Image (cartoon, rainbow, N blue to C red; front, side):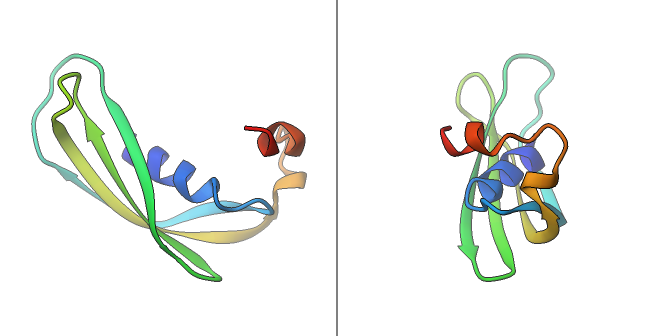
Amino acid sequence: MLDDAAFFAASSLETEVFVLTTSFTTYLTRPISMGKMRSVGKVVNKNKSQFIVEAVVYDAENREIGRGNGVFVRSKQQLADVNGYDLQVASHS
């Protein structure tokens, strides 16, 4: 869930190529055994070749239960070539 939130944060800033996770570190900060969770990702740094992203997951009471950070890079795979990816839908989201 943390990696997904971070991935989508990085992907939201890349319009031409697919983004890949090169590393991701997870910290579990509070136990949870049931209930809804919500995860939020935020790009904290980007340059020509990579994105550094942080993500936090919260429980139903909005308490932090985990966090992670990772590095994502631009691949050579064009989004237009990804099976099922629709550039028109993505650009209107």
